[in-house]
Length: 224
Length: 320
Image 1 (cartoon, one colour):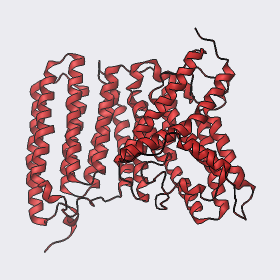
Image 2 (spheres, each protein chain N blue to C red):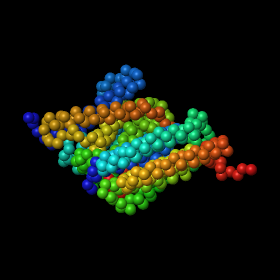
Image 3 (cartoon, chains in turn purple, orange):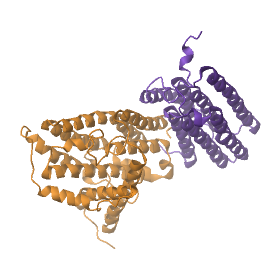
Image 4 (cartoon, chains in turn orange, blue):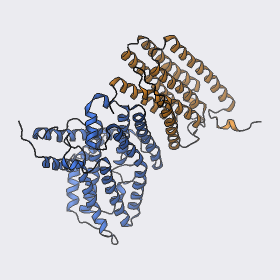
């Protein structure tokens, strides 16, 4: 098996790190740490954009990297923290213990999901001029793990973070498959994320006001 | 410039380097650890003095224990001293006995050593020793899949499972070093090593607190020279695992590529330096993290398993 080039290797390692961070979010008990991991993951995708821009000579991507860093590394985590009122909500009931499975089983289940995503996307055999096939497969795995995160954790905060990292996974797939996409389209995707943040913000607020908890576990109970 | 060293002598030197260097590495780690905790710490040579002192002491065995109780430390040390023959300790080229066994062979020897020590602990009838061996066996069953997947990664990367072949593959190009499959497998192996040397997540490797004891508890009933052999054995195991991590996975540079005396001596120094570097990293990690409760081991093992499985995935799909 001949080794891939250094550029492909770097892109793949960054993608793999993003997937690991996704698992980190799954494992993390505190909202504050989940948001921090999300920020790191977003920073990684900006770094990947810069790597691709440098390798394939696409100056547009530098602008995209800057925009997505400003939005996803700074703005979204800031808004999320503000919304969740982090200092107050650390002892909010039902967030640390919002697992439906115990952490080890959750990780093992999500390894299974990741395998499914990995082999599905891997079997597309998309190999453009410089698109690392592994990075695409990892993006597929990330989509499934993000879904897993939203299913396994029963609190609105994890579900919001899971949704935003889902967007990261899709950006990753877009970057490796179609790096030459016009800047205006990529920016439009980023603004979609802003809309999602606002919608999730409203949902979190409304849920917290009604249920006095961030946990969604008691939503299944009938209330009169 | 310098004379060529005969191959059998190099082969012997591999074993001697590990055998004589191991207590020193433990001493350095203990010193670094003490410094990190703001203590002066024992001398670096303290493990050698400990071994010498224990060898002069009287050996006692429990009344009902059979001959196996006394034979076990000898078998364990013999197994540990065989492994340096199989892995690249000093040379980039395979030595004649290096092909007696592959990575699995080395793994079998490590498990054999651990098995005989656990069985000897069962012989004693002492509750602590039995608790230690039962825990050690349970947790090694949990980390076993991780090691298997690391071996799979090696097999996918090189097409063989010879440690020399992987080291040569890693040296061959920079592209190999940044392959995610390789990076993930190395990280998984490092986590297993942290667990196996009793650092993370639950054990205090020097302590006698029964809540966190796994490996330490097994040698409770041994004394005198036999206890010295067990201590030396665990130091050997630590250096062997560090050597596998450094010379096969992470930094297989600095090994002798010729038979020249200078190159071989340099390789000995390089190996010990690499082991000390890993030891310092391990000590820092050990001191940065709080010990977890015993049943949290499954979560730690799940994390290591995740790394190893992802390593195999990335190799399988993209060949990356």
